[in-house]
Image (cartoon, rainbow, N blue to C red; front, side, top):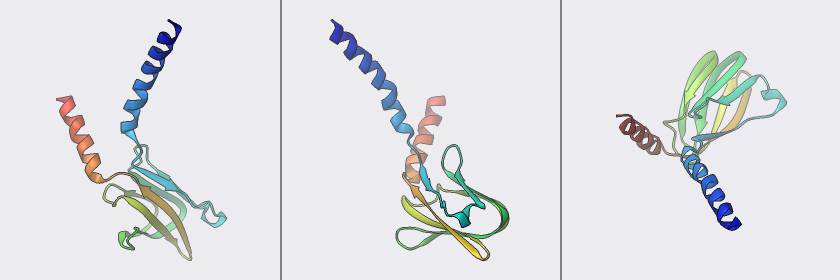
Length: 130
């Protein structure tokens, strides 16, 4: 009888974990922890689909190179903060470079899901609210 209770307990415990698996991260940020990069704050927003860069000095330019050596982001910023949406980037590893003359700060963003997966999830949410 005791084993039945244990099986029921673990069954109920595993149900929420299976539901949480559908809400995996969209992207992972690998920050540059170099001493020279400490002036640039690198973070993702709460839903992890937007890159936020903030600095005390001007960020002149931000660009990213994907695994196929193509630039998917190429922005002339000239501001102290910038938000870059990651939804339009292809799945995989992207090397970002933030140019703060004369310093270039390099960090990595890994996109874990395609934009088509996000659109399908948003459509499911819209249909469930109707």
